[in-house]
Length: 199
Ligand SMILES: [Zn+2]
Image 1 (cartoon, rainbow, N blue to C red):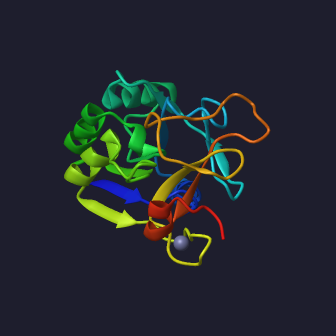
Image 2: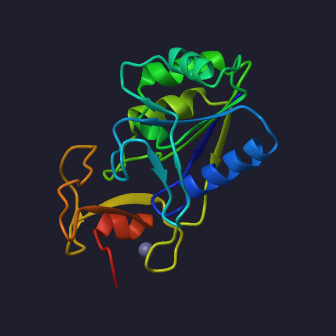
């Protein structure tokens, strides 16, 4: 089955993914950790959670990669036949073709995709749109709060001074090494619309 667990920034999606993965690993099940190549915040291979959990992705998917081919390659490296569980972090960065491929693979495989639903402008990411169309199990990862105490539902891009940014390309990850880089936070709909990132 193909699962999509979506949440906004600050909802601890990655921590949940890593804990769920750990539970399967502890049982001795064959588990693969996958991430798209686009996110380089914590090193190309690292899956890093805000609360401190981290792990090394075994597959870093380039946009042209076949998921099945990469899993086959990894199974050979691990000297076993096939994976039973696949975990994908930052799944919003998957391509539509990769999500389609995962849906086609998911009759015999449990695939857990964790990611954002929408970008800082409130639009779908290509990967999220495909997952919302094709995943058989779709659940929200709650827990992120706006500064006002309401549930955060909207991803917001802010600059080093905390000002809300409402223009620019969909994917922008600040790797310039600035002291105060561009960041993403979760806001409630009202404060996202008003562009108010603090009291
Ligand atoms: Zn708010």
